[in-house]
Length: 69
Image (cartoon, rainbow, N blue to C red):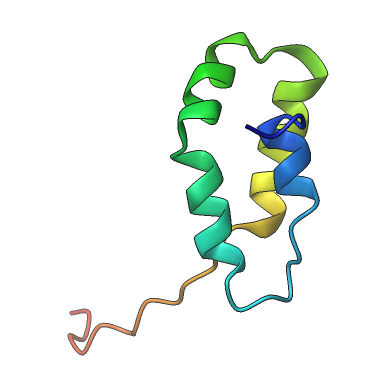
């Protein structure tokens, strides 16, 4: 088990890695995170939300082929 919190582990991931999103998922769905999440509060909670907002995967939806009337 890592001595760093899941938030610290998230912050230390290489965002340019092709495996970045897989590693984020592994942290967020791991047992350590599930145990840690109910206890997170204050600055750690804000830090987690801010970090996830910065690294989220943006997807573009294709335009609808239907024209509006």
